[in-house]
Structure formats: structure tokens, C-alpha cells
Image 1: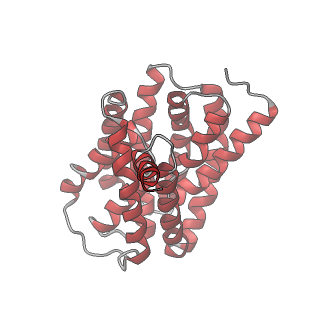
Image 2 (image 1 turned 90 degrees about the horizontal axis):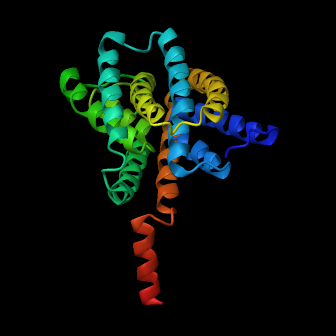
Image 3 (image 1 turned 60 degrees about the horizontal axis):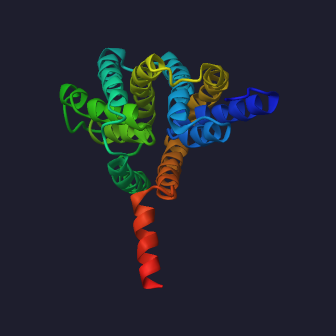
Amino acid sequence: MLDLGFDTLMLLGGAAFLAGFVDSIAGGGGLITVPVLLLCGLDPAQAIATNKVQGVCSAASATYAFGRRGLIVWRQAVPFALVAFASGIIGALCVSVLPRAVLDLVIPVLLVAIAVYFALSRRLKDEDAHARMTAVTFGATLPVAVGFYDGIFGPGAGSFYMLGFVTLLGYGVVRATAHTKLVNLGSNFGSLLLFSATGAVMWPAGLVMAGTALLGAQIGSRLAIRLGSRLIRPLLVAISALMALRLLLDPANPWRQGLSGLATSLF
């Protein structure tokens, strides 16, 4: 049972503030909040579900900040978000179906690839570039895949959305970040609705975290707007690499188990 004493409230609030700040720029805030929720006594399913509350508020706060600056093309972006919303629900429904080992194998590799891409790519600039696919094709593919992943697992979803907007639609880094927050809001909200219906969300903890995450996201999004690629690029690289490392260090991860077995057989 989660005891919301003063110390716990401070820990949850501080973690959510930092997560909201990071999420609004580069994603990956769940790396901060989910371990803290586990530390406070929630089981893994409750921690992932409860984390969606602050994730929704963080994404909504950042979306509002970017939208006020005219950085979101609503007519094009809202359909993307609706697709991600539906995919997030489907992903949350499939949590018990898709083998977790598959995600543990694939996601760290993808995150490392994203970190390398963002570190080396010349396309990650403040200016827009040439799109490689139409908005219709993009909407029928990337929000579907990443929204599903966000509902079923989540870490790195913001980085995957960001990669799509930059490489496939040619968005500049600030504009891509703005649209990522709206689409991420869609998939987060969809999965939150499903988790709420199953009773997995611990609302007292989630609401405490939502308030500070909202504030952190406001500060982070304003810094992202002001500094552009000078801030977003290094944070994307760092967060993607840290997420990959965090997943690889999980004792249940097949990569770690395989390397441990290899080391044991060699030495």
C-alpha cells in the first residue's frame, strides 16, 4: 500500500517535475518516475499505469506551450494524435499478449541507433527540410506503430516520434518537438484510459505527480523554444543512450543475461 507521507510526496513531486522537464524536450521522463514509483511500493503494472497520469499532464502542458507559439499545424497534427490515441489503447490491451522479451531485445538497439543518428545527422536543424513521405502515409504508419508501443511499454516513444517527424516529414527540430508532444499526448491518454478502466492507476500518487510534471514541462518547453537544436539535440542523444543503458542493465533483459552467460563460460 502506498503511504503518501510528506517524504513520499516530496520524492514523487520532485521526480515528476524533473520528468516533465525532460519529457518536454527529449522524452524519457519515465526513466525517472517509474523507478521512483517502484521504490515507493507500487508493483510494476501499477507503476507503469500511474506514470501515465503525469505523462499525460506533462505532454498536455508542453503541447499548450508549443501551440501558443504557433509551432503546431493543428489541422495536420490532430489526426496524427487521434491515430496515436487509438493505437495507445490497443497497445495497452495487448500488454499481456506480446512477449516482453521481444521488446527487451529490440528497443535498446533502436535507442542506441537513434542516439547515434541524432549525434551525427545533419538533418537535425531548426529549419525544415524536404519531406520523404506524404502526411497521409506518415499518419497511417508511424503514429500507429509508436502509439501501439507507447501503450504496451513506453520508454523511448518520444524519441521514436521525434525521429519520424525529422526524417520522414522533414520538420525542423523545434517544430518536430512540438508535434511530438501532441502525438505523445494522444498515445499516453489512450493507454491511460485503458489502465484506468482496469483499476491499475494509483490516482493519489498520479495526481500529485501530475501537478509538478505540468510545471516542469512548461519550463522545459520554453527553454526548447528559446534554444532550439542547441538544447534539444544533445538532450535527445543523452536521453536515448541513457534509456538504452537503463533497459540493458535490467537483470531480466535478454542482452544482459546473454552477456553474463558468455562471461561465465569464458572465465
